[in-house]
Length: 88
Image (cartoon, rainbow, N blue to C red; front, side, top):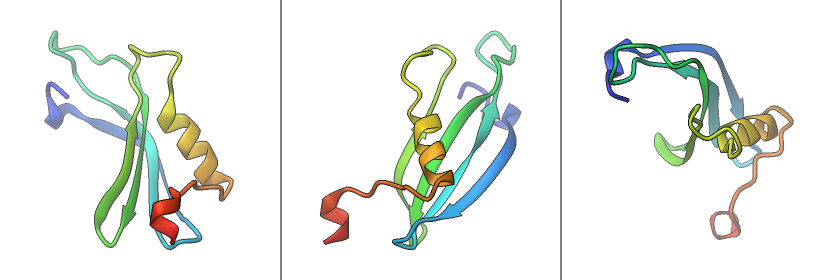
């Protein structure tokens, strides 16, 4: 983010995984280096014990690879994938 103080957030949702992780999803917009807003994109954070375990931030520059949207859709359905190394 070129101008973090300009960040706007909306549609924030929180979920809890069956492993106790907190999932935070929503949309953000912030000013670019030209001073204009680019439009809202999605973000996803998975927290465990106050630490970020995973994060995805979509951008308008990449219209085909939207990991935050995929991860938030899974969280909303209660299907948060956790790597095998973290469940054992």
